[in-house]
Length: 371
Ligand SMILES: C=C(O[C@H]1C=CC=C(C(=O)O)[C@@H]1O)C(=O)O
Image (cartoon, rainbow, N blue to C red; front, top):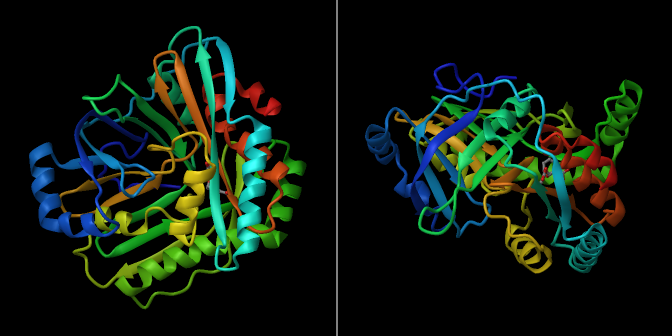
């Protein structure tokens, strides 16, 4: 699957940028859409070069990063030995995450208008020496369906050089001229790599009313947001199974044609973010529940990362299957969509399985079986 038009500088190997230049406020949900008109994006692109890269945090009120020095990812060979893992700690522990899921299910059952919330947790790792981000990026590039990314996300005035690294399987929005594309994912099963087991898991996922329901909320939200901006919007067909290196997902390809090419990719991404693939339905209630029940601050996890050019074209992915790197430490993140029919133990296991992408790249794939 190709996520980027051929003109994108890093089309073949991922999204990377040199330095965090201009932290900016997203403001209100639609505020930036006006500020970031085609003209302002063109002016910005002229200042920083042909293209820009940006990262939006999960929180709509958070501070985003506009990144300059867009640099093609160099897929260097990974060193033979990954740094030795010294410690690992789940944040929170699996039992506490399961308790948070149970509480979310209680709240969902108590209010029929509250349909879904995505709850996440972290996994803190420390290594004998600092993992090499370029080597990790090369490892993450092995999955052809995911977008590898490596972005500096630190605010220079606040802290040391934090980097966000991952391989996103989820396309939030791509815009080329008037053509737009999205590929929402929701509803998941662990991939074991054994063909017969994965085949059976894919069949169970396709037949699961609970997974189809949590997926449909995301497709509905994206369709409702894009349809008024598009001509002849055709409702997408049923979901398909989408296979990544470590997971199976329900995924729905969405394609449409904008009425007006003047919407920039940035504008559309900000209108869509965050979707119920990482937030919930309704969003305000999900945000409150996430603030109440999650132990690890999300920051840029479950945010959006993307690029754009002076014509307004660009592509945005959801920042999942990722980690924050800070020296010898890494914090991995994983979330699961919780609906009324969720089983806390199964959702906890799902987050454990989702850590698999980063664990494999970091050379500690075996840890996935203990989570
Ligand atoms: C929030 C994550 O995944 C999202 C994307 C695909 C499937 C999901 C799910 O089945 O819950 C999540 O919505 C994550 O990987 O941390």
